Image 1 (cartoon, rainbow, N blue to C red):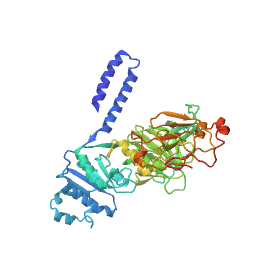
Image 2: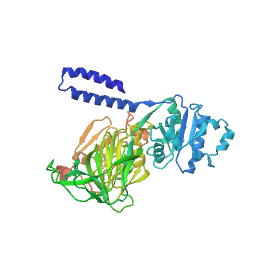
Image 3: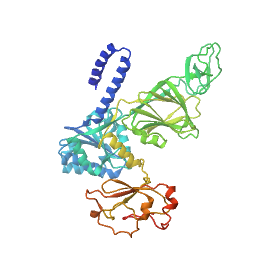
Image 4: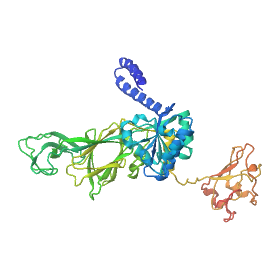
Length: 542
């Protein structure tokens, strides 16, 4: 990846000598274009395993119906497949003693399985993630999320076989697993590098729990009441000792001798400042959800981007999602659908108590912080891909950044095709009854070739000029008087499908466009009975 960028930079240095006025912007533009081209090449690259050594099988936890399928798949790798000759299989340690897996019988019939069939644990995935060449999941979308949860750092490529409910992240049909797995070995397949988020939990350091009369440090803060923007000033003077009465409340307000930095910041406050330390870190492929938990009160959260205050969230909660997670909780909260190859972070409010807080996409390079302020009525609760639910107390916050550990999933066709197929199959995206056209399409098969395009019945309440197309594509215009002057013949008998088409093999069709014609309304169609309808030789239109 560094080669094309270095070449472009060298060429840009020569441009800098020629035109220094535009060289800087040209350099940035060309470098950005080079990055886009490299990104395209990465997305189109096919991955092929020449000689895999270790394959891991992850089965949907708690599903007893998949135990026998896991055993059969492991035996297929060891006995049937020639492409995976000599490969070692790792399955879940919990399946070893189950009745459906029948590990002892496998060893009796296949003694070599004692060395080639091993068992994995979460500790093994955490300590030695690079020992696996690729992973096969048996289940649904939750099993794929479980695989991401097991590999919190490096993650091997994942081939997901559909055996679950929704199947948005599992494009491969299990009934054809042998075809797909052999295709990976023979011709290779594309890999979707799904971005993940690193969520770091920061806890407020408490010197003495529930301590009254505890000295605290104060800092001057100016807040714009219109925009909500907060500007942090200097530390307060220590002339007066301030004590923490209640959590988040400080006695006294001393603004004497302080200069106003901006007139727009009308609200002046002094807030207590505490030290926070990181205590937990999670890699999520779907979303981080911060909500009110069991509290009946609305959540109060402060959202920061790159250490700048963005907004105050007053809602049931907030979902910070990846593009992969845009079809999960974010979708239910009215968030936007986002292609998994777009490098962005989705900020989706959950039931906000305002009309103007809309879902937002920000670049994944932005560092987000979600804080529970000191004056919040209640605590907040956070979950990471639906797991590891924790409580956030006043003063705690979570930092969200783009993870350097992507989660590679093998594509069935390509990234875009798989994504839109999943939208249509699982979410019925944009499925609707097609709107009928104003043009009536009629088949011409029963009319004689000498006059193949004349309609035989015309509704008298419509005054019109009709345009027709004959068998050779020539347009003919028939006035209403010409139509009414023709004799109305009885319906012709239907012909066989072979006789309905033209000599070129294309069926003749009639396109009738009906328009209002006041001139012919009274004079030309008075002699036609109102009961007569416009009828096709094949079908009847009412």
